Length: 204
Image (cartoon, rainbow, N blue to C red; front, side):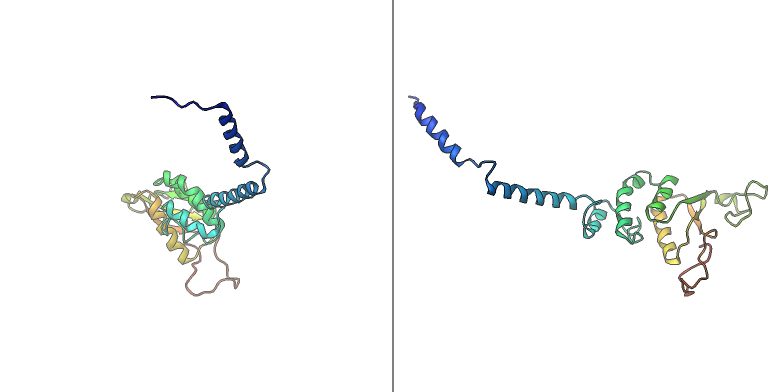
C-alpha cells in the first residue's frame, strides 16, 4: 500500500493555524476562566475542611466521622466546640476504652481538666487519702471497677445525663461511673441560676 507523503509546506501551514487558535496567556477570557476556577476550587476545598468550613457543613463532617449524640455532638453547643470535637475525635476514638480518652474529651467540650478516681470503693481508713467527700470508704471488694470523676467546673443535671451517655461510649466496658463530683467548684446562690431542679449543688 502506497504511503501518502505530506509536503513540508502543508505541515508548516497546519502549525500556523493551530498557533492562531491556541489561547494565549494574556487573553482576558483565559484569565477570567482561571480566576473563576480558582475561586470555585477554593470554595470546595474550604467546605471539605472542618476547621474552615461554613457552620452548616459541620454536621456532615460529624456524620462522616460517626460523631453523634453519645459522642458529645449535642453537648458541643458552639461552632468552636464542634470543630474541636471533630478535630480531636479521631484520637479519642483510637484510644477508646482508656482513661486517656476520658481525660481528652472533657477539655475539648470546654468542661475543663478532670481527675479520675479509680477503684472508688476500695479506699480504707488508713490515712492514705483525705476524707473530703471525693472518695468512698468501706465498699465491697467486688466494686473495683467503679470510678468517679472530679470536675473543675459545675454542670447541670441535664449536662450530667449527657456526660454519662458519652462516658458509656468511650470508657472501658467493665467500668461503672459512680459520681460526677464538682463540690470544689459548685453552683453559687447568687441569682444567676434558678432553683428549678435543673441544677445540683456539688455531686451527681
